[in-house]
Image (cartoon, rainbow, N blue to C red; front, top):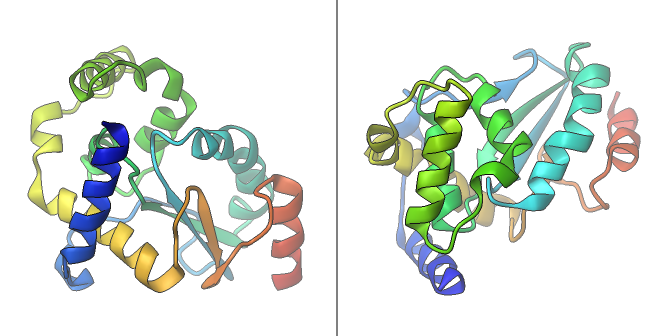
Length: 195
């Protein structure tokens, strides 16, 4: 069933033609200084264990050494691989403040909410998780917001068309796809070459 949903979502996304200018009112989740020398785009799916690993094991060092020092900014792009990830992406964008707090919390605690046999089970676990973390959002309003939904789908479309994204996480550094194994050592080597 999960494979069928993924295939359906992929086909649906390919048929859309959404203009990026339609989403100017939705703020991109970004960490770092606006005028940083290096821009990283991180295409991720909130149910992807490798993406969670990036947030747990790579992002803190990246933030400490390059983002907090003003060298790098990172923009998180949505690339949901299933309906559960799609709903979680909507939740992460719902406050529309550009802050990464909710997104990071979802990745750092992925095992608490990504469980269940059906999308209804996962949604219930996601709701419980949000309450347990005191994240005050209207779940139904967030997951049915058409503007946020289109914004997320547009991220996925752009990732496929512009960067040939076909897996998560996919990292783009200054408009070039990062092709090495995603760990801090490899990422640091690539960044040092651009400084």
